[in-house]
Length: 456
Image 1 (tube, one colour):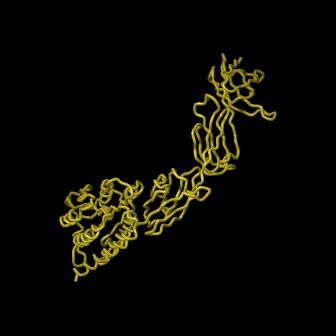
Image 2: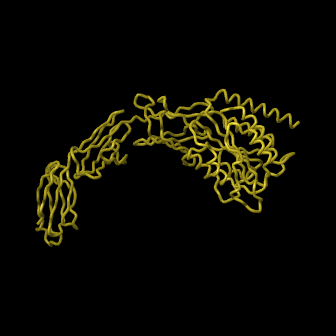
Image 3: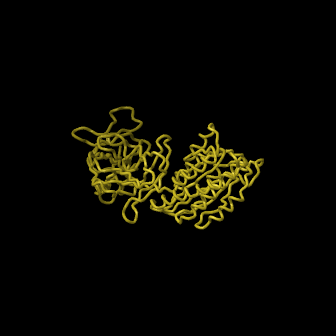
């Protein structure tokens, strides 16, 4: 009776795989089976032992998957080489590496595995990061089969999340073999978790997992310009998990060779919040992917370029401008001069950190256009004194003195790089004890010029 059920299972698996194969756009899929070989896997499960059920059904599945050239498989096990008493928390090994014709190797290794030791899930997941060869257009998937939780000091949830953030694997599939309810939460955070209560449910879960793993869910992010065309690119974007706030994926948006947004492979079982790191950033929340389909996420990110320049040869060493959205106080960016920077289309207020500061309001950034702001070439004012002075420099605007900067009262000689214009210096000796020692001195700075000013 059991043999007949297994034959039906294989046929059912093949039917699912053929359906998936016909509907997929066939990127290469790598599946790493991570099998628990700890001593507890000898435990009885209905009419057999857990390890025998797992190996038998896994061998049948490997035999079915080998028929598809888009699928590569590998086998890693843990807890199967060192006895329990040693508590070997590094007992894990890649038994069969990824390859196109390794079905017999995997099945043979499954026959050889004998449960022995402990359960180092975290260390095994971490080691699995090196099992996947590099390559493009590839979906990397881990299917972990276990009957227990972490028995070493690691944090499997943190390790799994790190693998996903680095883009090494999609969210792993975890199949628990009769794990008690009070321990479920410790594995649920590792990946897409399924708990099998008996052999029949394990068979069904294994089929569901493989169907989901191979069902080709793809995504592209269309960064739209003002004409609703997906022409914007070369900007970083981050997918977050809303409930936890964790970063799930972090990509630099790319257009492929055909000029279309590149295809992404995201876990389809998660709702996402997306931040596109334009200036200012754009946010999109509660993104749900349709499983088994190609999903398009449109985000309006029309951009233009701001260029900041100084006329002529400049004495500025590190001139910057503070960029605000027009009418708002939040800083969007602090931009260096002589660097091109993209911003979302719109109006911005600029505070250029010259002496004196230059304020510009409602500078317009247009789609695919470079807006150039050019400030005058500065001059230099060199101040000489035989005694330490305190003083301030002002610019006269509409009959009022507007503060520009203070003298450095601990220097006898100092050089200031100042924009062209007429200025007033008000100063006195630092050690003077009377207001009447205050002096006013007017001076004019010309572009590219240098002026010496003696203070007495």
